[in-house]
Length: 297
Ligand code: GUN
Image 1 (cartoon, rainbow, N blue to C red):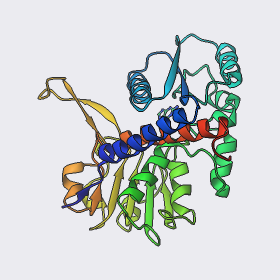
Image 2 (tube, rainbow, N blue to C red):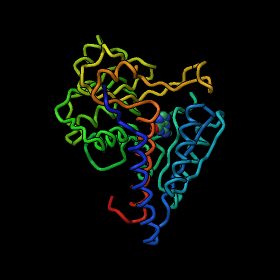
Image 3 (cartoon, protein in one colour):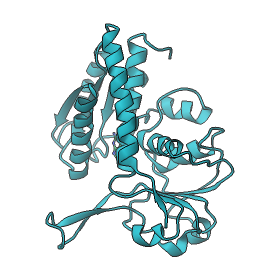
């Protein structure tokens, strides 16, 4: 039976450290770190993520500003707001919640964010720095997973790792971070996707699997090597008449059966999701320390 990689507890430990650092900044005459978030439309999942980000800012002593636009906002209006926030000296971090409506170009929007405020790590400059192993903002979900592996002392060096899903937000940067010459890291990585032939042959070889494809309970026990470390990035709401809420949240891993075979596993909820927020807050703290001249870039 696998041990649980408790993202909620690990995130709480990180958040407590960040909150203590905020108090030190204030004691030194600095100001609170400030995160600005832009939300377009009212996609249910995005509403949940943004509410959680804003709430966490309050809990750890950050300032936050949420700017909402209707689905009908034009790309030009959105870009104008980004330019305005880029110039606001008191804002340290800026994120635009994804996905955006089809009439808005995600890449144009991401490029418009000042790289020094790019706490989501989606700007091409941030991604380039990640590829080169230079200091910079790492995308929050892959960074959160690395923080979780480190927190539990999981030594990944030399592991065969399989990442399922090649999104710009999770799978693709995750494959880079796991392959870098760092600890955790130093894995031999396969990045699997919808065109991968015989995916099970890959996952059955893997010492570490990161499932980030967005298909509920996709990874089954017979696809996993005994003793593997299994990280579940999926968050899908499915109807559940036995729950008072009428739904339940499930990951990309068939948790009950895979937990019988794995050595470590993340639960959903309470795994990667909590770590994503902790990583975002860590990025925002770092942006603020740099902007306030309290830490070298
Ligand atoms: N949509 C899903 N995950 C994320 C994330 O980490 N950041 C942003 N901005 N949008 C997302």
